Amino acid sequence: MKRVTFSRFGKPSEVAEVVDVPMPQRGPDEALVRMRAAPINPADYLLLTGNHASRPRLPAFAGIEGLGDVVEASTLAPGTRVILPPGSGTWAEFVVVPEASLISVPNELDVEQAAMLAVNPATAWLLLELTGLGTGDWLVQNAATSAVARLIIRLARTRGVRTINVVRRADAVAALTAIGADAVLVGEDDLAARVRAAAHGAPLRWALDAIAGAASGQLAACLTPGGTLVTYGLLSYSPVQIPAALMVFGDITCRGFSRYSEVARMGSAAARAMYARVAALVADGTLRSEIEARYPLDRVRDALEHTDRSGRAGKVVLTMSDSTQATAP
Image (cartoon, rainbow, N blue to C red):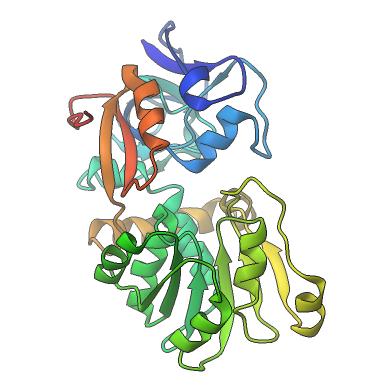
């Protein structure tokens, strides 16, 4: 069977390798899962480059999330569709994981959307839960063309939360407006004034930061005194930079957010209930991630190169079976 591994850290498209390995054998309390599809996420890049907080021992298996069908297990029936726990090495044709860690999802769910359920939709859900915002409240976020930010726009719309979305390209405005963004602002120049104008003077108590670096301070400056900046990504690969005067006189709270840590704190029962709610939103189309390209597993390097392209308008997905059809160039 084929599996993606890496034996050194570096540029993902150079260090990822497709290798032939023996079929994994399940042990007690484990399940053998045939993979169907897996997305390429920013966290995958962090692992492959060695910049993730959890630095794997090399050689390592690639792929943090994905969807598969149970082949053999003790309690789950063959054919049960499941999403896998983080760090399962999902870029593979088959994997073996602890059976208790699997979360079953309806077989009627779209294969590719379900393959992306564990990370981005759950992150969007948990971030909005964290803010506690409701009808009429405003939220500002950067990196608004990212998959998580797009899901936040969609989910916020259903809750009556209004979003101000910061992007770098003017050609992104129409697409974000079409999925429910209340305001889309291009560039960081004079950002605080433009954000306040877009909110029509309403309080801005929460800001979601996926970039870090200088972008953190620019976003924090948009907040109402006493507001909270949540950094949940590190697209800039730079330390969070916030002026001390803004912290002191703006009474700004800055905190981090990790979906992995948040789910671990929830406990198994609460996490399963959360994933069931998110799966229902994926099923009814409320939460849907755009897909730009699909690649078969043996073209993982091409898929990683595609993920690096600027102006990308959706996720790149790896396919492991004929349940989905590759559409990559």
